[in-house]
Amino acid sequence: MPKYLVCRRHHDHEGEPVVIYEELDDDRVELRKVQEYADGRLSRAHTINDGDTSLSWVPVPGQDEIDLDQQFQVRALSAVVFQQVRLRAGPAS
Image (cartoon, rainbow, N blue to C red; front, side, top):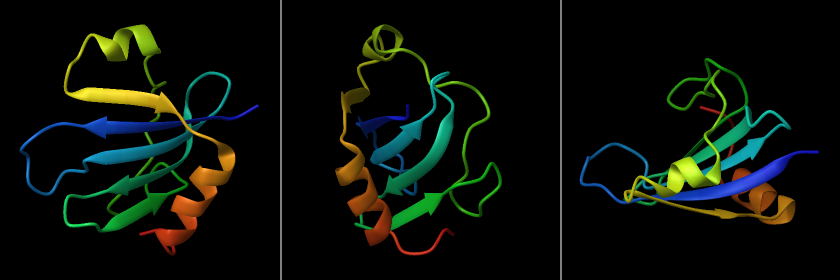
């Protein structure tokens, strides 16, 4: 059963996403992803090589490991909210 996360990333790197929405499989590998940038732009991916935004082929770390890095703030997300964000992002990049 897929899991959904939203990750807020606190940084000053222009051109890198500030919010990442992820759909993960049981092994925590990304199935789909939407990235949101500081200017409000959204991009999405559903394959490893999908233009500006692509899926990672390595599993997303567990919550305990993510919590060690203060630049990230992660919380669970519902499938409905993930789908709403994904649709707002338009077609995959």
